[in-house]
Length: 274
Image (cartoon, rainbow, N blue to C red; front, side, top):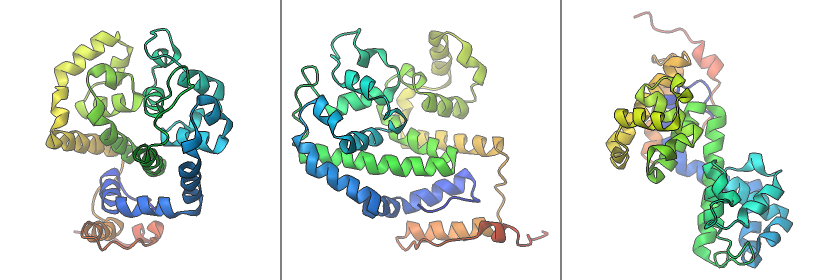
């Protein structure tokens, strides 16, 4: 991964955007991930039941990571019950879990008849989709580990297209934080009844605007500016940011070459007095 050390979120996002394709390829070709991808592609076609998936730990871990559920890998019994759920039954586990990651896992793995049948695993398109999710999720998590604001913006970009109403936003803590900050809604609103929260957010923003790229960019800019201000990041130009601006510009033109910078040395350079 290309380091974001010493950069504010605005510059970090510019660097991430300029180097995204390169970083995704680096993940795919790394020894750890290329082995995991190869194992998934070779064996997932033989998986037809939930029990078979659970018995192959390597494949189980792969799909959990692909759906950002690495923190739930230990809960195999719950995941097994989830994947065997009947979505038509309002009392089933898949309909009782509020974390959208679980619904995403259930929907995309596509097990039927209480987990005894699956017609997706033989599809090359489906396999490619899951592998892409795995790579992109690792990329997103790696950026979030370096800069939480950058990670939140990348997550918002990924999820914005699937938002249908304010309940979709409010059941997702990261989306809620993004929209609350961008729209200037105080954190204390979280203590209100969910329907009152929806009314308040509706008055602030029309979700149909999420189809407009300019509106998405506006929300993103506001969120980044407020987050950087809250964290006390100095966004004034210095030697480190000047170097990174040049790197981002080069990357946008397809000529970016990853380099290692000692930010502590660069930022200690004397600044202009004017």
